[in-house]
Image 1 (cartoon, rainbow, N blue to C red):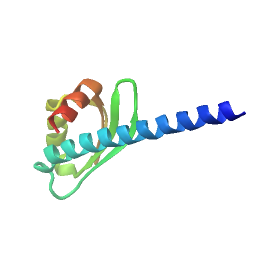
Image 2 (cartoon, helix red, strand yellow):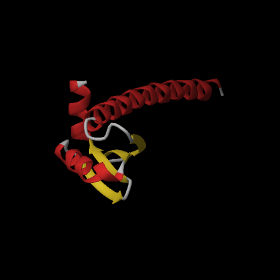
Image 3 (cartoon, one colour):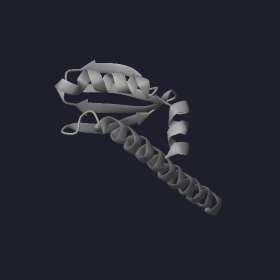
Length: 106
């Protein structure tokens, strides 16, 4: 029983380290995108990480209707994949290759 508990504690430590690392990566990517997009929409801009996937980090970008197309264009320039759009938001995937570039720059 003691060996199982030891393995559990080791796994828990690894999980916590991984969560910390993912949080740091998520924060760097969101801060980078916020900085890039705030020049377009200063009044209403929200970025929310939905989840991590095999393709990259999935994010919901909420913006004002008047800046929607301009933000969408800028997101494409920043090498993100548009996965969906609606009147006040855009769903994107930031590919892992782009995430890696952002975290190296940031």
